[in-house]
Length: 80
Image (cartoon, rainbow, N blue to C red; front, side, top):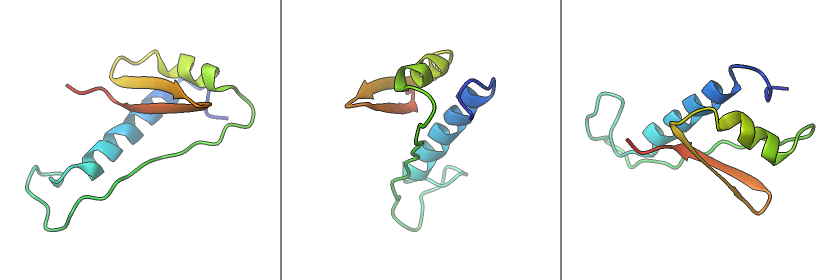
């Protein structure tokens, strides 16, 4: 189980950053892409913990926004 491991919040932050970059219309070098951007999302299915536990773990980072909605946890990068 990843939740409860010290690296879990960092892991989710890296996934959020990857999704942000994939969703931009610029490539990794900051140049316009030759193709349209595509939405990138990640999903975790929780079997042994509650959504609130995961939210508590992730709240240790100030670079992510965390919201609970309809039994789901929504996490994305904090705008700079």
